[in-house]
Amino acid sequence: MGNRADVLVRGDEPGRYELRADGVDDPLMTVVVTEESVDPPMQLPAALPPGRPFLDEGEITGPDREVVLHVDPEVFDGAFPNAYRMLGSNATPPADPDGDLTRDTAYGRFDPEYVNHTLRLGDVERWTVRTDETVPSHGHPFHLHTNQFLVTHRNGEPLDPPVWHDTVGLAGGTPGDSVTFLVRYQDFTGIALAHCHQLHHEELGMMQVVEYVEP
Image (cartoon, rainbow, N blue to C red; front, side, top):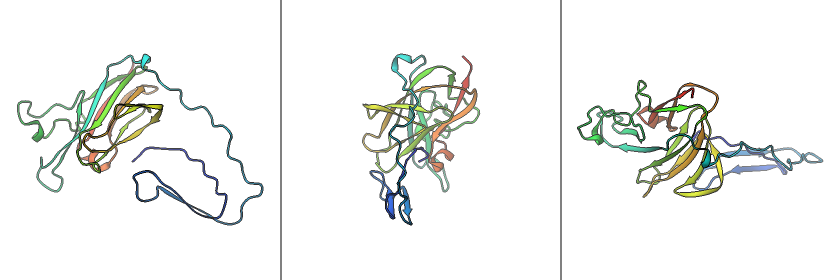
C-alpha cells in the first residue's frame, strides 16, 4: 500500500492481461490490448539505466533505530477504540509513566509537538521495523517521508540483492514480519513523518515526527 514500481508492458496480442502478486486474490492492474499488432513490434530495451547505488553497512554513521508497530484494543470509548502505536526507539512518552502503558492514551502515538527522531543530513543509519500483530491479515505498510531506504533483511534473512523501497509491507503473524533497512538522509532539512501507510491506522496514532537537520 503506497509503494511504487516501474513496469514495462508490451501488448503482443489482443486480449486481457492481469498483473498479479502472490497472496493477493484480485489483480493489481488489468491491461486490455486491442486492434492489430504493430509491425514490426516495438522492442523492449536490452538494458535499463543503472539504479540507485546500494548502501553498505560499513557506511553506517548514526545509531541503530527500532520501530515496533503495535495495537492495543479497547483503549478508548466510541467508534474507534483501538490505540495504534509506534513503539521502540524514541516512542512518544506516555501520559502516565507509572500507569498501565497498554491503556495509556499517549504512549507511542502521534504527537505533532514531539520529535521522535532527529536525523542528520549525510548520516547512514540502520532501522529495524517490525510488527507484533499475531493475526497474519493484520499488516502495516511502513513509510518514511523524504528518503528512500534499502531493505537488506526480511525476517532476519538477508536479501540478495537488497531492494530500494519508500514503503514496505509488514504482515502480522506469530511472529510478525520484520525488515531491516539502511537509509542515507539527503537533500532536505525540516519536519517530516514516519508512519503506517494505512490511513485508518495513521489517523488513529500510528505515526511519528522525524526532523532532518544539518550536520
